[in-house]
Length: 138
Image 1 (tube, rainbow, N blue to C red):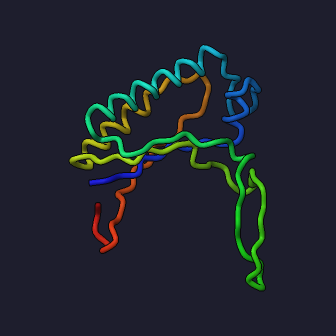
Image 2: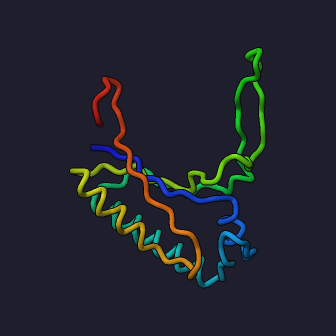
């Protein structure tokens, strides 16, 4: 079965990761960043070796986001991010092909072990089964 595994964040997290502390998170050091990158690289390598990795990517900060919607007359409206009403955003994801929900949950537990500086916020890891064209689960 295929699953979308998502990690969340906020604009403030990206700012903290670039060395700017804020009320949301302490500043990340170069050592903190390298520990996170190393952890993610090892995780991704393990998932590739097990054959469970389909895709996985970290996403850029919300400030680089573009929102495309419609106004009341149906015309396109384009807005640059970040969005004040959005507290959390998708920070990264994996598409995994796992034998069971239990297995992908084990992987989510491992993701939660990613190193970060003391005081940085903890976000849940979200797991969503991917639906196939017929409405079943892939």
